[in-house]
Length: 286
Image (cartoon, rainbow, N blue to C red):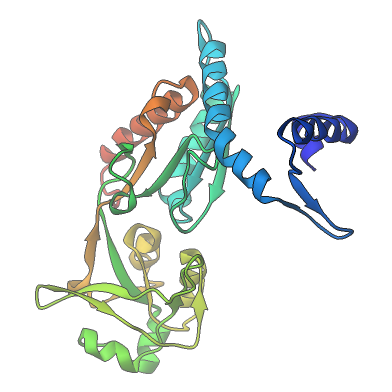
């Protein structure tokens, strides 16, 4: 697999690995009949070399872009919700404008070390991003809301308060990296509260939660833009709208040294242009 990704023969890759192992005097891989894994030396080498290799790749992309169009592989680590809310229209426009740029999206739930793992940039909620990163706003702020299907409300009624959620079937959201169930951040009597919910279904993806809500399973907690069309069409109804809280929105972030890479600059310019056009469209949800 590694040979195919590098465009090399397996024997050439094996030879290169042996040369490195001979030079450092340590094996890079622990091999069994069923698996291959990195040794401690291999992990240390990757941690040390990854930033330097990424810097070389960025400089080569810049050189390729001199006097020409942006080119190369743009690797972005994104949260799942960012793809429908902020990324899809940008990637579609990039395909037309910059055909020499390949955008690779790695959907992940938690925060990662984008430099150490070889990404050019990440996309997350603003509150999650480290202070030393350069940030570019991709969306306006939006609310985190609760919603359910009319069929569910017809069967179980509509909760009148945050406390009433304890007697309702709430679709849970599990954080993959920690394994914890996410507590719903809500507003009650002007105060922020964190609510533990219970129900018959748990998901790790907001889009899966929406499907369950549409099927009448229970109440979900999602970002408002993801369900706005369903609410407008009457397929879902908002629950306790007065308890919704506002999130800062989605931001692209990257290390300061990467800000001049032409491929990343092209993505930022395209995203900002699409954002300006969207904000001028009457009736568009934030």
